[in-house]
Amino acid sequence: MVKPEVRALAAYTLRQYEYRYKLNQNENPFGYPEELKAKVLERVARADWARYPSFDLAELRAKLAEHAGVSPEMVLVGNGSNELIYVTLAATLSRGDHVIVPVPTFTLYALLSRVMGATVHDVLMDPADAFALPAGRVVEAARRTGAKVVVLCSPNNPTGTPYPAEAVRRVAAESDALVLVDEAYREFGGQDFVPLLDEFDNVVLLRTFSKAMAMGGLRVGYAIMRPELAREIHKAKLPYALNLFSEAAALVALEHFESHFLPLIEAIVAERERLFRALQALPGLHVYPSSANFLLVRLEGRPAREVFGALVHEHGILVRDVGGYPGLAEHLRISVGTREENDALIRALRALV
Image (cartoon, rainbow, N blue to C red):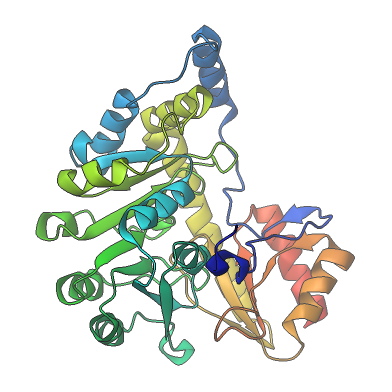
């Protein structure tokens, strides 16, 4: 009854650990501001919970369009950007199609592509080149396979690498594929690929409220693309994917982005740079520059799995062991936390390595 493509896959899982400091999922360590939580609760309390939420999310799409500098017809909203990854792939891929994914990157792209029956082709990025996007090899792979979709993540997870606009432009111009660009961490690096939408009708940008907007628990994401493409992708979306609570929190966050969230983003970036310098000074660690809210670290003296275990079991610090990703043996991904959390991590790693 279940497709063989699905039976052949390993599920996307995350093992649970006891911890004191959580630095494994790239969340905003400062949380959604308490003052704004009160405003959200006021809105939700006034709403009629018996009624379905907004069908077309017109108010939220209008505010998102203003925030991104596009028209509302170019915006789709989903239950987290993960839903929009799924919807976009479901609307474009058929069994036997081909997908190009530069790796290492977020594993959900390949998993969902294979669920659709597509064949995924990895293009390995070079750690010696700081995991820069090999645009030429991506284009060559897309042309050779006749790929339907190319998936890019910038800044990339788990490497933190930003992709230059010219490299993404080349992929969009020369690959003859739909180019899905995941911008989940864009606020921490200042990138903005919206101008590409003026040039190309084959680009979809994905964004999320889970990281910079501290709303991982509320599941709000959005996609930006040409209006004609948005109309077609919308056909694959489930109705009422966003509940009224999440919609209210997203509206409040957008209304107070500059006053409440921009200072938090700046604080995270400042902590990222401080943490980078501190870890770089420790012997036995190689730290990669990052434009996201996490750092990728290569361990040169002890196995990554051993250090991961010591961090969580001896120090109560949960990070992400990414040693199973292509090309990342002996690597850990560390989310940027508060100053207290980062100092605890520095002390623990100094003792361990």
